[in-house]
Image (cartoon, rainbow, N blue to C red; front, side, top):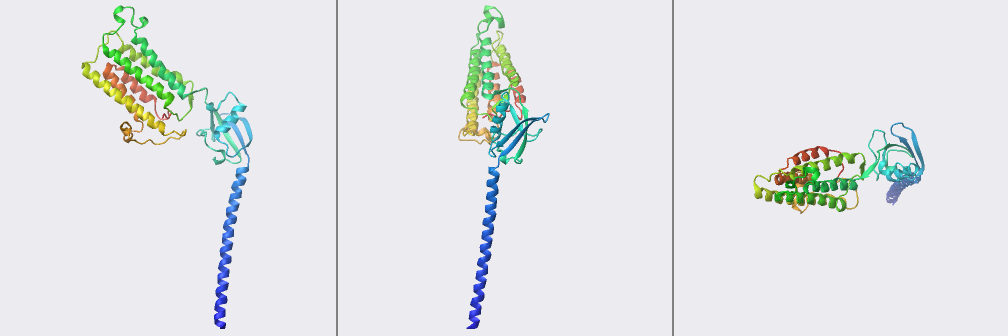
Length: 331
C-alpha cells in the first residue's frame, strides 16, 4: 500500500510541475506578445518631425512638427507646398540622400529608415507639364502640319497652277493613313493611356515637338511634292501596304489596351504584361513593348512602301534612339 501511495504521489508531483512549467511559458509568450504590441502601438502614436533641406546647399528649408507616422510622401509634399507655393508637388523631388533616388508618393514615413526625426532633401525639378498634355501637343501638330503640304499652299510649292493638286490617288491615300494614325493616337491619349509619371519637365516639350512636327513637315513635303512619283509596283504594292498598315494599327491599339488594363485600379506600379486571347498581343512572347514593334517597325515601314518616303526610315531610326531607358512608362 505504501509503495502504491508513493508512486501516485510522485506522479502527481510530476504532473503538477509540468503544468506549472507550461503555464509559466504560456504567460511569458503572452507577455512578450503584449510588450511587442505595446511597443508597436507606442511607436504608431509617436508624432514625427521632418526636416527638409536643400539638396545642394544643405540649408534648412522647413521643419515640419507633429507629422503623423503613417503620412505618405505625397502628404509631405503638400505640407511643403503650403510653405512654398511656387514649388507645387509635381515640381518637388524628395530624397533620403542628396544623391539618392527620389521617394515615391505612396511611400509611408514610418516605413522609411529614419527615426522620429527624419531629414529629407528637396530638389527643384523646374516647371512641369502633364504627360497627357504633352501627347496631345505632340500629336496635334503633325495632323495639321501635313494638311499644309497636302493642300499645296502657295508659299510651299509656288504659284504654278500645275502644282495645286496631285494626279496620283496614292497621295490621297497617304494623307488618309497619316491622319488616321494621329487621330487614333489622340483618342488613345484621352481614353486609353495611363502614365507611370504624372509630368515631365516643361523644357523638353520643345525637343519633343521639334521631333514630331519637324519630321511630319519633312515627310509631307516630299509625299505631296508636285514631282512625286507613285510606287514602282503600282496597285499591288499599294494594296499590300494598306492591308499591313491596318493590321499594324489594330495591333498597336490592342497592345495599348492590354497595357492600360494593367493599371485599372490607378496603380503606378510597373507590371509585366502577358499575352491575352487577342492574337495581336502574342508578340509579348518575343518582345516587351510590341506597341513600338507595330508602330516603329511596321506601320512606318509600310507607309514607306505606300508612298516611297525614305524620310520615314530616318524618323523611325531617331525615334528608337530618342525613347531609350528611363523614359516614361506608357500604358
